[in-house]
Length: 271
Image 1 (cartoon, rainbow, N blue to C red):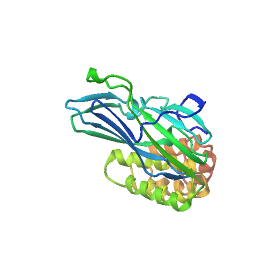
Image 2 (cartoon, rainbow, N blue to C red):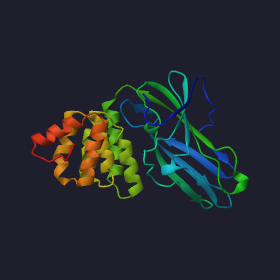
Image 3 (cartoon, rainbow, N blue to C red):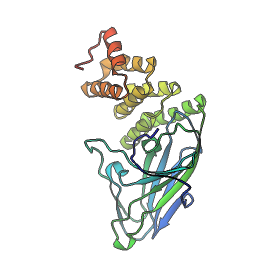
Image 4 (tube, rainbow, N blue to C red):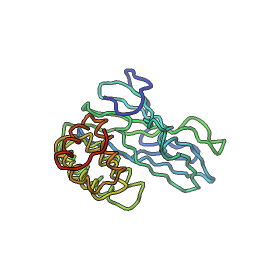
């Protein structure tokens, strides 16, 4: 099952990997996976780093949310090769990904690979992330830099899932807005009850991470997830109530949420 990005190419065979990262004219890119092994039903997250080691400023256009122009290639466990682009909301809403790096400056961004690829299939994966060509300086314009990594997806491991979700929970309860939202977004892909406590904690205590927690609870879907939203309902403003109904609708669980709200005597709003 594909999560998000459009499929550009699928074929048998491998693709060239350039170790852990690539460098071109003083511009270096690397991909740091949070683990070499990820449990099924959990998020697969990594940190993309772009460092300017040149003597002058460098400008790149990374696209919507600093991800829209990335090309992400997966070598799947069944031997399939797939190239994917970042899924975009229908309204095109998101941060403008114009990046200007001064000499010596580094840009770090969390990538949740579930945005591009579903990981229901167990086994070994290879991933390569290609940046778009540099905009400035002109002499650096050429083929985009590529960085890569390898990891395995193993059968459901409750202990590993819980540890990963607690790590993301801690980040989502932090103070740096970009890190909070990135962690909550990653946590939204934790579709296992082992991560329910972390999703509930973020729902209740993180304003900036709340949308991600709601999306994760909707995807998770058991009675406990519905009960968590109902329990927090009176503390949610109109935006988050509408978000909850919308996300549960997308997940095919809106009726369960509305029925639970009605039983609890809470107003759900118009259908």
